[in-house]
Image (cartoon, rainbow, N blue to C red; front, side):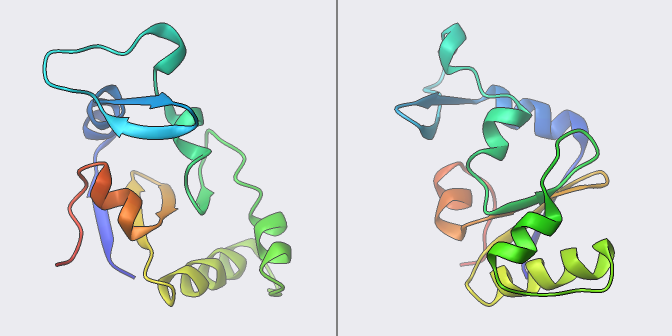
Length: 117
């Protein structure tokens, strides 16, 4: 799976450059700021990813594994199998410190994250 690595500060800056409207994430136009109900934080962002494993947000690894009709002996293996499932479907992995988010490649590209050509 192609991976994108951001520091926590870079991730915060990335989120600060987004807004959510009509349940869709988009890049804020230059010089604009999001109104309060369109601000994107890590919780808002997490609603748009395919899967996540985070210290701060419950990504429900076991529920995701069950939804994918996969099995694993432990949470680490469960997460590896989830990533493999989505890698086979062209998704990308966004790593922010110990947190990992699986995004559809088109979403990552639309939000300005570096993706493979």
